Image 1 (tube, rainbow, N blue to C red):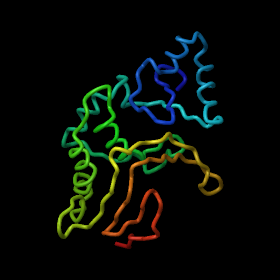
Image 2 (cartoon, rainbow, N blue to C red):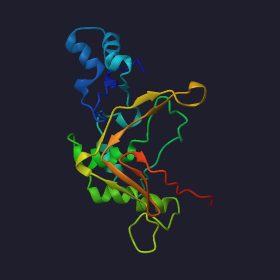
Image 3 (cartoon, rainbow, N blue to C red):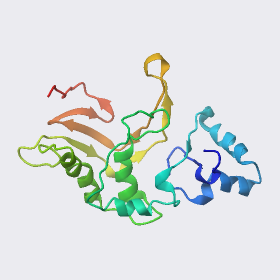
Image 4 (tube, one colour):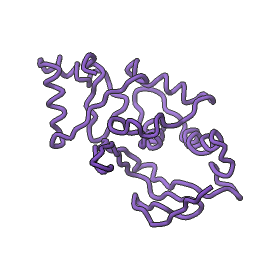
Length: 205
């Protein structure tokens, strides 16, 4: 990782997942006339030494997300997660649905956005169809009433945090978001304002 300081960025409390090259560790070091590792150490001392740096990999090879904009409009593209948490100590993908809505439909400044209705469909009906779930993914009579109630204007992500609450002190990343008012499963709210209601809707197949 430290062979390419141009690909390491400060993440900040309001993460920017499409950062400009001028904000990289390499650019900061050149601008301030200091060593690149000195910049790394200074950045990591933020938040009482709990700051996280952003090191995007394959999908940021070109320093922007224009190619993903094109991919996300292709019918063969599937929104999913990669490894079910096997690398949860250094990657956090739980924020992907919120990022899809906030970045791609509202906040993106370095290129074209996507239509809100297309992103919602991709994360609801399209995903249900990929996994063969024919009884959900749309609000229609006879369908399972699974839905998220979102305050679109308040939707935002916070920086990931490392927590140590797994067995024997195991660590993993968590990431909070604002703007989710309720999560409803089969017509019953299971979360309201990020708090569990105690309603348990799961059942054995």
